[in-house]
Amino acid sequence: MMDLVVVGGGPAGLATSIFVAKAGMRVQLIERGSLPLDKPCGEGLMLSGVDVLEQMSIPLHGFRELDGIRYVD
Image 1 (cartoon, rainbow, N blue to C red):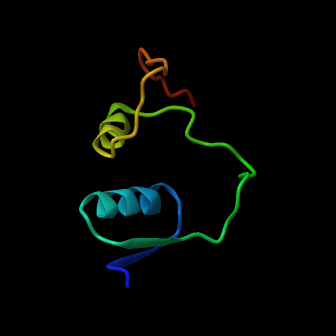
Image 2: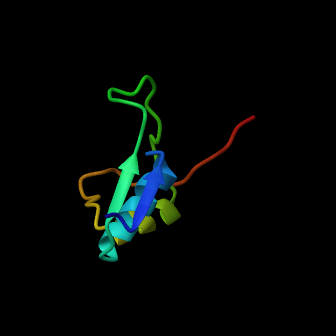
């Protein structure tokens, strides 16, 4: 029996599933898509995203750090 069922394996669903599992609950993640994805995304992370990944115990060593970001319209 699951404590939580998460529908959708996008960023929010995956993060929720990881945090729930780390809290000791049983979680079932349901995703209708399959790999490989037809488009890559997430080529960079803002600092707040890095903080969340570190809280999930996801190793981030070996990646380049950005010096800044600029939006151009």
